[in-house]
Image (cartoon, rainbow, N blue to C red; front, side, top):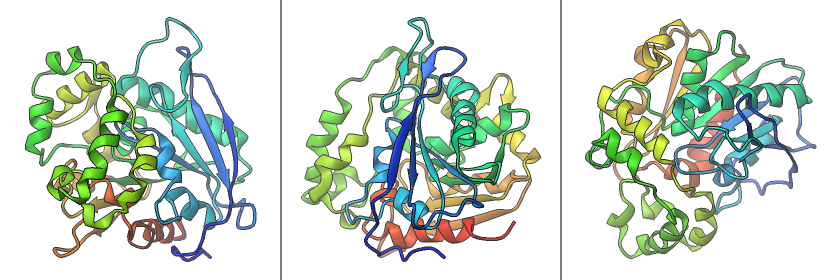
Length: 331
């Protein structure tokens, strides 16, 4: 049985590994276990953070119960996968190539899943992959490119596959692949640390990304630890994806490749997401070959934006607990 979402979380066992990719990166892979709740028959979960972020926020919540805590309390072993360009992942070969959507999906995520399975105490033999924002898109791409991925179920939280609806700000930011790839952005965390606390007084400042009424902004200085500088190559890849509508990697249309998938899929969407609109976040159900479940979060009165799905005051009850319930369903 899962612990109530509002329960004060127990301390978790935590350890790190740095599996290497075939092209010279050591990836930060952090394992969390609630020893008192752990059930080895349950599949381990690989958590994949999104664009311009590391996995810190997945293990932190202003109210106490983070996504990692909720999953661990349900008896699961959780692995946070910081891919190249995230967290403390680093080059072990000076010539190792930079982050790109293809490299993250083709090399990094497979290496993380394989390493998690190899070190896991679970007896399940497969992983559940839970992708956050772009992390879910990378999970889709991994399934499209890998011949036999050891994946049991997939959860995508606010994740684009086909850009059915594209916010104007996103179109403007990625209007030119060449321009997006030429600009190097630095100091993103510092800027976020300055802007985020202002959202309480100027709620429209972050409305595309977060509903200030849903978030405890007193913890803004801690939450921005998740912010990373985006790499120009990633920006170039995203610009091409937004322009095309579908993500194409190694000549494979990732959207169309999902028709061959048979794993159960849970799609989580915020009702007023200004980064990945609800129509886009729920788009994969139109092409997915296996069973699809949908979790819509937010009401007209208490609307949810992108970040609220992870750090919203009621995210433990509205998002994390339903995800655990879905994972608990028998196969």
